[in-house]
Image: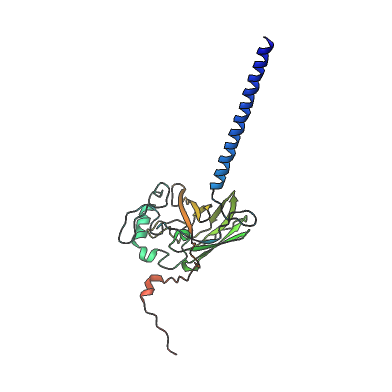
Length: 270
């Protein structure tokens, strides 16, 4: 190879190398810009001082799940709904569907709502009233407008030794990344999932997952396990919406059992 040819080859290689470096830098810049854009578009969520998602606020569902958690058409007693149960249909064991139908027929007196009892979990989460979350590091309080109900979720704490047979159960929380996982057990069998008579036994075990998708929305998923009533565990899904109206707060809700709100109140004479 002549000297001129060698110099020409070296120049060509140097030019090609310089172009490759420029191309690499261009790709790196594009990747950085794209990454920055994705990060900028990711909605920020509020966080506590220790970096956990902050669920504090007043929330409410829009789904009419309290009428019936399964999909149903409109009727005289309830509007239509697509339901909140994954797969649509509850996996009742043989003979249990008949009991659900009996519950529905006797709902005017048998539903715990008609007696003003505590509605239980998960029903209290989607009943037609707002609720407030007050969050600390070791305790998450849920305060419900409906019948002044409340839930105490103790974080990183073991369940009490049962059985305890509580209306609202015993709730214990842990963190799975940015998701709050609440394990609830020790229930009685006196509450229903809805006004349609869907029910459970005292073997009910609920695992809830709360995740902020942005500042004003919580994704809620609950896995229900009750081997006395259902053939397998099943899931429900909801979205909680933050109330952002100025001055919004929980108000009094006084429940009157057995339609006693139709009875006139007589003030005793002194």
